[in-house]
Length: 291
Image 1 (cartoon, rainbow, N blue to C red):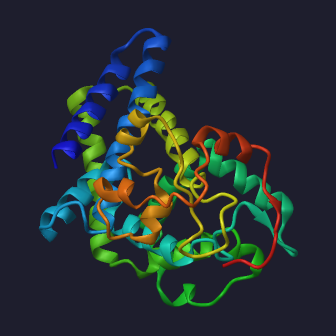
Image 2 (image 1 turned 180 degrees about the horizontal axis):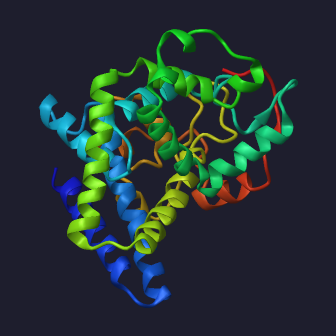
């Protein structure tokens, strides 16, 4: 709890500082710092999604709602999407790094660079706005049927199905709370749009860069298709061991503090920066069938 509270408070201070700085260099420094602290908040949200943030279920849910508001997203939607990721990892809907026969190469490549450049974060925000404003488009029944392989390989139908399965009233109330929190921060801290955008776009790039780096070019296996990436110990601490993603996928109910004890020494551990640089070479021809 103390980590989530401290990270949230620091994120608010950095948003305020970025909004009141006159130098673009100072705004940039605040934005970069915010991008790391906001990932700490997201890692706390990740713990809440798996129900291991706090042993008290109500506290876990409350902090999940608050941490989601700072992303910004909704807790129920994030939970539905992330648990769907664990079910679909390295399947046909989540092999963005490989191009299969029948795939639209241009679409797959465009999506790939969107993931690693920060556009992915923007898509997440637009996704929940669409869920809130277009409820008729996210009813469970229309999303039950399988779409074309090209559509499925973008993962859009899989995530739309996950959204449709979320509790509709609770999910939308949480999104309204998220909007209220963001509006309250603007009013209370006198945030500027430029400062807010600088911080959140920096966070979007930082967050998006990791979201597939810990899976790219790994085994085509629902559980084993992940990496325990190597980063500087300070970065690993700020991300609450999120880079140890194979250990997490093997034991998703394990709190972050225990993950270092479950890193498999027999498996390769790429450096994050090398993995991320390799990803900019683009998606590769598929080596075989998906998981």
